[in-house]
Structure formats: structure tokens, C-alpha cells
Length: 209
Image 1: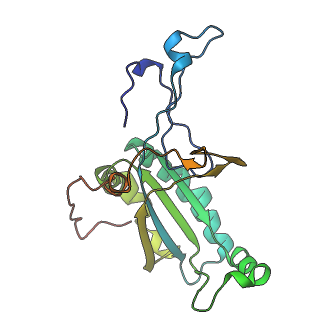
Image 2: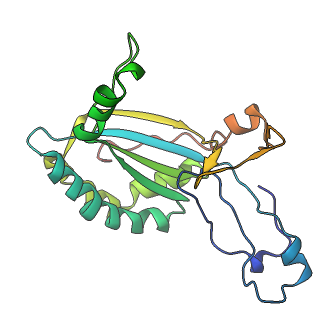
């Protein structure tokens, strides 16, 4: 990440609908900005995105699961996630009605051998390093929050992925493309290394997430 010489002039991270980059923009803009503010360009930072695909418990309806995930779990978890420097957290709800859109409206999109995944929700957390994720999960408030999740969440099934996002259309506009070429400065090797320079952590057996 580039270090700005005027940290006091930076405002909190601003994201679009699906960005994985932390864009630091000039803060305290007045009608007559100081010269360095007018010249500053956004500084982009590639961060690690960890996503879990989860399923609702057997006897929980889709609507009940959404109510729990969105209105109960999310606002409480957000306090802990922000406390331990999560850059962004998002839920992506995938009920059967939404999944059916693919099979009913876009059947040609499901090629032979392809499947429409049947998980109920994706939860994505953007972090700068794995220590921050460990801090989130190990926080006593987070552990208390998920302690009785068995009645709502199927703990036996889940899929995890990790990586980074590259965004090319946002808010209906082409982004991160200049003169037909992407404007991301980092190489594949540099981006692949995001989050890898951290320590291996072995969780105690009592941990829940």
C-alpha cells in the first residue's frame, strides 16, 4: 500500500457495490482545497477476501434463516468485525427462488456437468491479514454470538474460498480500465501474496464459527 504523506487528510475507506480495493480519498475538502488535496489520486489496496458458503439448519425455513442472518447475526457480528479491522463484510443471500432464475430463465447457462450451487448464504470478509480474521473469530463476543447457532445453521456443511476481487464495471460505469488495459499496478505474484505473510494459527478445539 502506498503511504500518503498527509495521513490527517484521509477519510475512512470507501467501497462501491463489490470492490475489494480500499480507496482512500481526500478528506476535509473545502471550496478552496489545499494544493496537495487537489492533486491527490485515490490509493488502492488489494486485500484478502474470505468467503464461506453456508446452509441453514434442517428445520429452518428460508425466510427464518434470512431473518436470523440479516437482522440478528449481522448487526451484532459487525461490531466485532469492525473492532478487529475488517475492511468490509457482506452477506449474499441465495434462496431457492433466486437460484431458480438460472434454471428457469437462463437454462442455457447451465452446461453439461455444471450445477447451480444450493447453499443458502455467502458471507464475505475483506481483511488485510489473517491475524485480523483470527482476532474476529476468537473474540469472546463473537464466540458468544455463534455459541447457539446450531439451531439455525448447518455446521456439517460449508465451502470456503479465499482470494481477491478485480472490479471492471461499477455503478454502471467501466472502472480500472484505461486505454483498453487494466489499471491494476500489482502483478499476479504480488496479488497472490496478499495475506500469505502471516503466521499459521491453530485454533483450540472449543472454537466455533
